[in-house]
Length: 274
Image 1 (cartoon, rainbow, N blue to C red):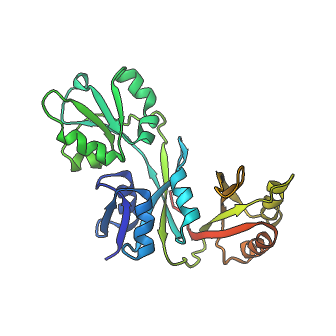
Image 2 (image 1 turned 90 degrees about the vertical axis):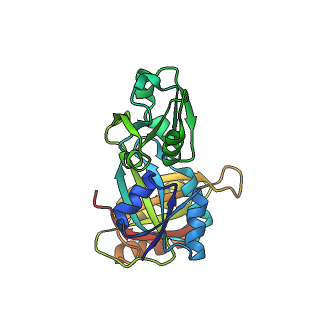
Image 3 (image 1 turned 180 degrees about the vertical axis):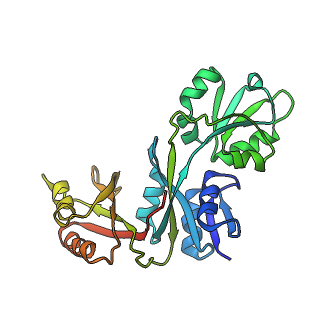
């Protein structure tokens, strides 16, 4: 049985993404933080880990990017999960709600709906949406709180769905990465994630990207993060199509290794089908 670590508790979107990749038969390992996902994989306690890396409306998940810099794991897969937020509560009446609990990203993704439908209601950040659902399930008496979470979390914690599809942008999607300790063989439809730094001089970024253009390698994403080694130094996360063992991309990586201060292949993996 495959052991898979993800941000818990059970019922998070990370749990949903893990189930989408591995099915209900996996051995679920919910953990309390992103760093624990990476630690579980590095120690061998988990075979794989699932972590969000970017959202289509809120952008990069910086903590995941920073952990990729520090860790020796390989990205071995990706999952694209359509995020459909529900407002869940043990109450059956929207007018009863005095506070809404959710992960900060979800509160941001539902900002307009909350302003229109629950103006002035207290918004409380939780470590995950499932933790918010868990809190809502414990509420009783005068404490009428709601959680923003998935329909599956509502079912798991026995909550009523007061509203569905409350995200402000209807095609809201989160991309998750699968991390493991072994590289993945080519499939013929792959992506590769790179960690690169550019020389700190005029034209450094252009020269870093030029070999990709010259070889006709398609770059699908680029993100910068502080390198945390020197002031105003940055590293770049770059996603490209192809596997690092493909002849065309392999030649580009050889050039980049010679011409850039830092190059790490974070992983080559099958592209998500959605």
